[in-house]
Length: 368
Ligand code: ADP
Ligand code: MG
Image (cartoon, rainbow, N blue to C red; front, side, top):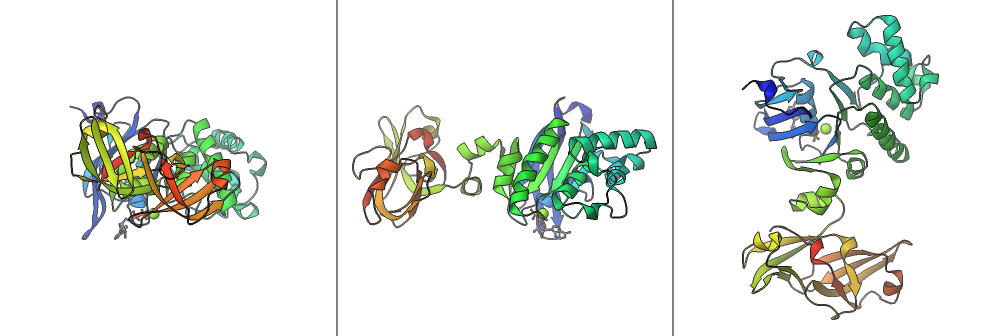
């Protein structure tokens, strides 16, 4: 089969078992996924998890030790960076200080041999899109950090690359500006229909901008999915903890005539026999249950059973829109609750026994 036939029409890029070794360090360990055309994918993971190495492999600055990379159905093995139609905006990918904004944006077109009138027209169009047409004649140092960021984005998009790579694009900006730029970059890249791979260690940035998020850990792709899929169906403790806030309860499986109970000291979760989660576990197996803080109802101690627990309120914090409760369980572990039931919780106080209840739908079981 011809390489170009192996990916479907909607696929912009495909990684097949890509690994990268630096001596004994496995910077990338057998990474496989597909990127769809027009998609905004964020690689999210802690420092050293392999995000930048992935981008560098896609850009062609490094060659994988094993596996291969297809862009638009073509095998990129041995294809140098300048022969890949890829746009880049890295945190240290500075603008040229001696060139005007317009010249900066036009630069990739110039290296591609586009004649002057055409490249100025296309660069002005792109500056229009990023809202900086009025700054075309200025030099980078005459612009704010956020404006320079938008110029760099215009330069990365102007030649209509197959893929745009962003490495920690907001790292140099302060928190408030970062929030604005996340939304702006998301709008601009969608407006021009760009296919984007972005890298960050900031979960909020990933959630704000992405169609899908790829979670990296120790050079491995831990899970890939939409923000909602990762939040609702994390495959591991690592993912549950990385996307949003998670309570992790350790328990054991007990078989019942009508399903299974997963239980620990002072809590239990019941799943009916037909439920795929009940079918995926075996009696006496140790498991970990993920429960999101906002899915737990605070109730009177002893008032609910089945999908319920009990503990002692250790902290109660009023945040205006919600209460946060820290509950100590019988085994000493702690559970966080976020509740908007202001009236129901107002009368509770630290030191009180408290009941907790949840819907079986909100239980995610992962291996112990
Ligand atoms: P991230 O971008 O997620 O912080 P990197 O991709 O930069 O992580 O690094 C992944 C791993 O590979 C780390 O353990 C890092 O130390 C190692 N690494 C990256 N580049 C090199 C290199 N050029 N030489 C040796 N080790 C490297
Ligand atoms: Mg990095």
